[in-house]
Length: 424
Image (cartoon, rainbow, N blue to C red; front, side, top):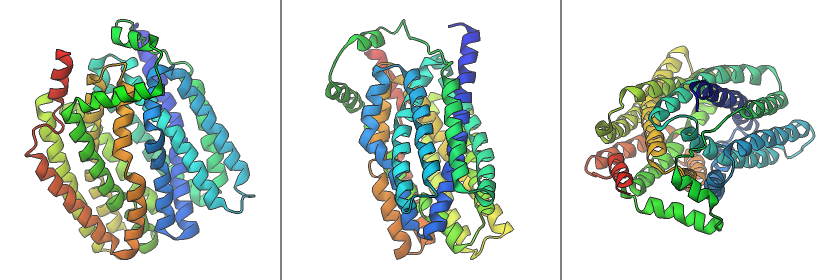
């Protein structure tokens, strides 16, 4: 693949994702505020969150098989156009549908299902766009670009929600999917013709069960992968219960922040991802990887506890409280972003090309399997205990987990995975 085509591919890849995600960010921001304003209930909000994670459990393994067996570019383009059709239906139904909340739930589930297939294909597509030595850089650049997009999207979303009706945000998102699909039609994926394993796998005609079983067998052979998935699944549950569910309720319903203030606070996440993605390139020594993850988990738990203390000092949103919350959430996101970028890049580099879709989708499915339950439980706990105390408890549990990781030599030790691959 020539340097010219390679550069064009990166542009097409990033542009397609940029356009597609921009509309999704506007829609996601608006729909979450709409549900909170419509119901005033964290429980109904948590149900919507649960519906976004449920398809990962139901369709994650199938998405990995589809990604490995079929043309990645064709599938991703079809999914973009299908999403546009779904949102167009929502656009024409908003004013006439009586049970609009339940209709939104249905759309959320459909879009989340499309997202499972789309995200799996995008993740597994990266090794087919650049050489393996450049995967970390492309992941970091992609995170930085997408995070910049979140900054723009959240600011625009907060203003749009206050000035125009929800239906026009939905229509705009549908248009972005169409544009993204047209851009992604131009992608040229490296066929990995030198990868004998991939060519052999493509020629085999086997049942979905055998394809699924092969992905599970690969993970079972890797002790470090099994432990990593369990740890990340537990952290994911704690984050959903302690951050994802209670914080929007605290901001919107307890501290009475406006949509614009909520948008400003939400900017902390993309800014933190940008900084963390850049820092991930700096920490590029394999022998530092495991220790870096352990330190990041400890810092993340500590920042969550500090976050709860800050929230306890303010009863209403103000300029000072917004600044404090904004800064602490940036620090929280930085440490998570470093870990996420390093883990994703290590997996994409070390997993064989013919298995990457299945293995990554199985990891995502396992990590998310408790997410819907965690979302609903988190929504219920907000009614039972002080949500600020709930945040502090979750932060403390992550600190304890990080301390336990210091005594385990296998978790996040990708050197073992790379050694295994070399031997095989």
